[in-house]
Each structure stands twice: as C-alpha cells, then as structure tokens.
Image (cartoon, rainbow, N blue to C red; front, side):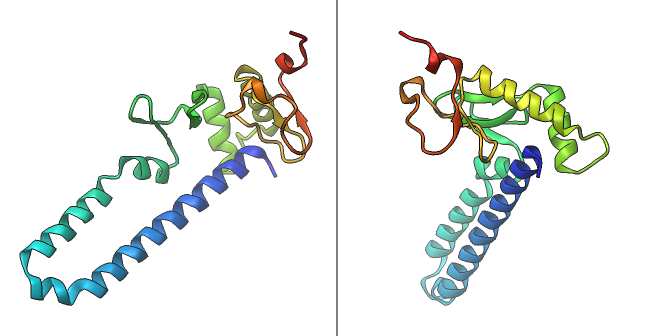
Length: 164
C-alpha cells in the first residue's frame, strides 16, 4: 500500500474515531445530567452551554478533522504541513507533494506513487529523519543525539555516520 494512502487513511480513521467518542461522551453526559439541569436551573444549563461552546470552538480538533495540521508555533491550521512536532515544527510539503499526496489518497489517475515516495525520501533527508525500512515511515521527531538507538531496521541520516 502506498505511503500517502496509509498516512491519509490513518489520519482520517483516527479523527473520525476521536470525533465519534467526543460526541458519544457529550451525549451521555447530557442524557445523565439532563434532569438535574431542570431541577437546579440556569446555572448548570449555563455550564453546559459553556462546555458545548468550548467543544465547538476546538480549533485544533477541527483542523485535524479536516485533514490539515495544527501549527502550535503559529496557532493556525495548515495544509502545507505533513505533520507538526516540537522538534522540527511544521514538516513543510510543497504544492507538488500536496497534489500527489491527495491524488494517491483519493486513488485518482494523477497518483504517481514512485514520485511521491521520492519526494517523501527528500523530506526525510531535509529534516534529518531516519526512515524505518520495514514500514516506510520517517521519524520526524528524531534528534541526532539518538543515532543508532531506535529499535528495528532504520536508515539513519548521513550525519549519524559522520565521525565527530
């Protein structure tokens, strides 16, 4: 299975699951505490309205559920990041990568898996991320101090092989 399809499918499934769990949890809370709201009055009703508003305005969750990435440095939703982490920030992807990523995720004729894989390998090198040879993903949170410490079969960045 192509890497882009895998990443896209995993992201989509996890966001759907998280959304379903949040909705179910909220409904259970409302159903269980609904009678008390009528008894206690407006204060508890106001509290539920505030909780609902917070859930509604969850920008990070909304961003992720739309297939985008939340950039915690810039506090904005981005389409041009493959992922975001505290080590590298936004793992930037250019327009060509975005197009191929979406084409392969949607399984359209524009999908060129070999080109997408080549672009992905370039990203791994650019961000000095080791590539897992068994599963084909890169650890973008990797730091050079951890060279040769990962379990499994990895292709490490060139910097790991250079003598100090």
